[in-house]
Image (cartoon, rainbow, N blue to C red; front, side, top):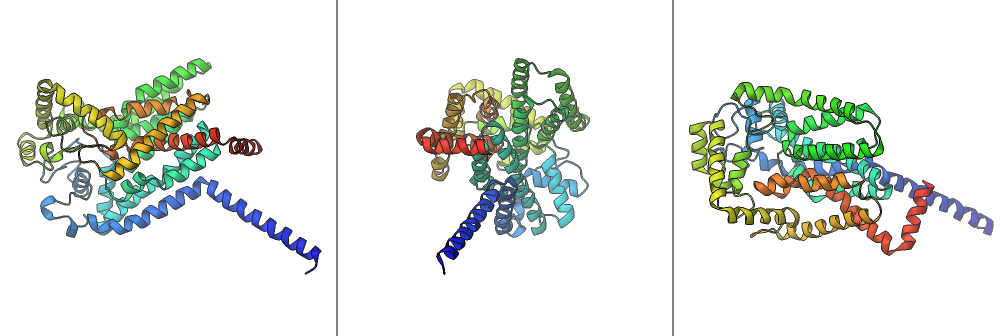
Length: 448
């Protein structure tokens, strides 16, 4: 081969390699690929755990509790035409113990594939996987809005392989991935609203809050604080907020009101979303501190005396009884309740409990530290106001679980924010300590 031919060959090969690398980078940068890979991996994993939800693995005396617990039981009642009812092991009548969306999805699964079948289990797990994978989009968009594309790519791929997102999609028939997906869109839209001039953004925001109330009302605790922050920031920027906020509120009310009316007509009591607060407070404040959520000592699905009391009194009077019992216990044992409150705070952010899981501790401790590092760098880099909605959500959202009882799965709606700030903390640290890479990143951003 002549020198000229060799030079031409090398030039073409170099161009081909560059083109291939460009295509790989374009694929890696695409949030659509993040979604596809996240979904496929979760669906494959879900297929491996279906036997855990079938009758052979779920004894009849537990009435298929592994298949969604109260959610699955209410779904069965809906599928059988009994209405939104019967969350425990026997017919207990209408209920408002949980919000309606996920049990309704369970009912659809059972109508399509039969009660407690492999088809119904895989249908629900597939929905879990879909919700978890769709969360890649708001994670990527929010990171892009707050920081830059490189941070967004890191956040999107981190969410794709985030252990809790995978675990909760395939190992738990519950609303965790659904409420997390809706919450992630809310966090993104909240930051968008600060400078948005589009009414449809406000309408979408109100709609998302309404859906969240019907999926997992716990997230609504952040609404007044985030709304106040949006109003404050828009006022500082000289942007109108009252009329679009009113439109958003009307959309939220329109979505939430039918369920509230149903509850009032059924129970003759104002129950906006669900009625289980006093039960959950009782579970975590009854003297048992052996584990973060001691269901065996206080919850009707595990404790025979509590179950008998529910069957005797009915749901509403049972919840009233738990209110009296729990408030009396808190008044008589303030030291215990204060101590266990602090233990729950530590548990939610480190995984540390008396019988803590080493895997959770080794994962959550560093994760929390890196998240804090991300907020520190955001403040130092002039992005403190930009990330304030994330900080508000992270501080406010877990408070009900500090008060009642804790599980790391309950934290899932703010996991997207933790991932974003963790990734930013790592990347900001690298940029701060390796100026050459920081300069290259800046040049790449400018060129883009």
